[in-house]
Image (tube, helix red, strand yellow):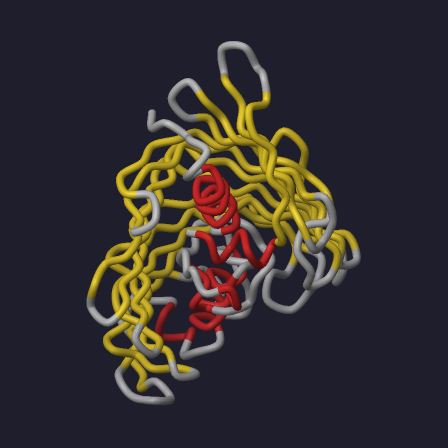
Amino acid sequence: MSPITTSNSTKVAANAYVAASAIDDSSSSLGDILTGVSVARTNISTVKPVLDLVKRAYTRDAAQLLTGVSVSEACGGGGSITFEANLRNQQTVSNGDSIVMIANRCIEDGEMMNGTFKATFSNVTGDVLNSWIWSGTLDTRFENFSIASGSETLSVNGDMKIAINQTSAYNSSLTVSGTTLQTTEQRSGTTVATRTLSDFTMNSSNRSGTVTSAANFAMSGNTSGLGQFSYTVRNIQPFVTVGASMPSSGALVVNGASTSVTLTAVNASGVRLDLSDKTSGAVTQTTTVSWLDLLLSF
């Protein structure tokens, strides 16, 4: 693993938080399916965009998709999107339903999608499309899937299993897990960050707008601020977020070679970073920064 030092501990903590957020369920922007570094994308998610893509397939010509025939359509701003699916019932999501979505320079809401997304349903109960009360498991895979917006291009490869239990319009829980999720960020054609999450698990619940989440994963990659790196990340206390704010409580620890840094949410405005020697456990440096400064640091 890579060392964590007094000079890079803030960047290490920021990258760990961003990576954990990539498998959280707090954002509705399709662009946030990846690992965008814009401060406006601090709540990065894979889950809701995935469900939006799946529901889009069911709202199209599902009668053709029942037979496994490809259905293509033009996108609102240009390009096209193709669905290949096998659905048991065009009116509802069923166990065993599978969907492949292939985007070809598909532009929606100013963002251009390319690449392939695959999904298969299991453990389905309730009406996924028309009810707030349902549960199910979605096995997904991204293959060279990318989104370009302005000068930024974000891409993702890998697998993700999403197990969801929705008990009302305001209450849900989910577990997201997977073997490997690789993300790449480019600006003006130049790669500025790559991250790989390995053996990742995230447990989350949403109770009337209060989101609780905790993640555990290994992380490696390369960023312009850190260079090459390899760490493990684990929530030691779940993050608690109310509404659209940043977490007001919770903590995660990033372990590196001989050292670790613990990120603790002081409130929705700031965090405390404690750099520790792993052998003695002694805290060697404590820094308090705003969430904004933290997310700008990497």
